[in-house]
Amino acid sequence: MTGLLLTSLSSVWAKEVNFDEVLKNGNYMLQIGESEKAAAFFAAKVKKYPSSGACHTALGRALKRLGKLDQAKEEFKQATEVEPTFPDGFYEYGVLSESDKQWTQAAQAFEKYLELKPENAQRRTIEDRIQYCKGQ
Image (cartoon, rainbow, N blue to C red; front, top):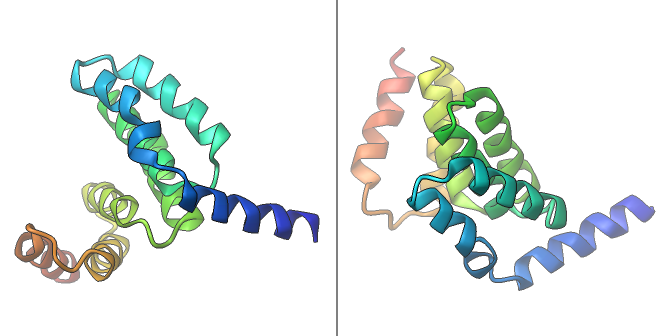
């Protein structure tokens, strides 16, 4: 019961936090090529906000830049599980699933991304990726 209550509270808490602001410094570190520092920064944010898809996705992006693709993919997957309404986690998970030739997972992740973010400027390209994955 306590675990359920904490999970519910952390989910509510995650929705009230401005994660663009929380992650701003780490995103800047990524922009200037300081991926190790960014990964450490984002890992601390994941510890503080474990129910945040944005934090898990940010850590995954830093790990991806460092070439730690399996760890990155796990963070993206975690993002989709802890916050199933956060679209970017699904996109990133789809990208790495596609590169691992896990076609079904990739197609499902891309479809969920488009469901959550239907007005995406890259919609047609992502739809093409879905069809490609389904054809494999």
